[in-house]
Length: 158
Image 1 (cartoon, rainbow, N blue to C red):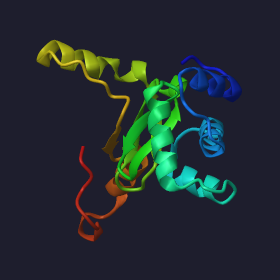
Image 2 (image 1 turned 180 degrees about the horizontal axis):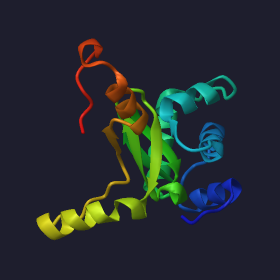
Image 3 (image 1 turned 120 degrees about the vertical axis):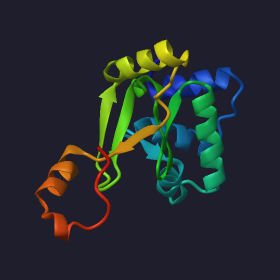
């Protein structure tokens, strides 16, 4: 489905045979209004309080349907799966395993890696559904300024 306003998406889902209950409608509207990424659990907490009969399993099932229909896309993070509007899927996530900070790279930034995998291994990588973990610049710089005998934990991978 192309980028549309939430009401158009609800109408298109109905045309595809999806029954639009008040609970499912609330989930669709809330998921599409969420800035950036949102987990099913966070979405359920937001909706369960104000929509009677809406539970976590309904949220999970509806998000899976929205993903299947191309309205939402998902990314696997260390803490679980999160969803975002499908038209915002053109990026890759870098997450620091030390401080938890995260930044997004455009798909064009990782094209050289994808090309290398394709050329050397015959593998077409889809990097849009998971995060790449490592150590951010700030944590690397902090580690370098700590006296060697006083450092806690293993060194960051470089």
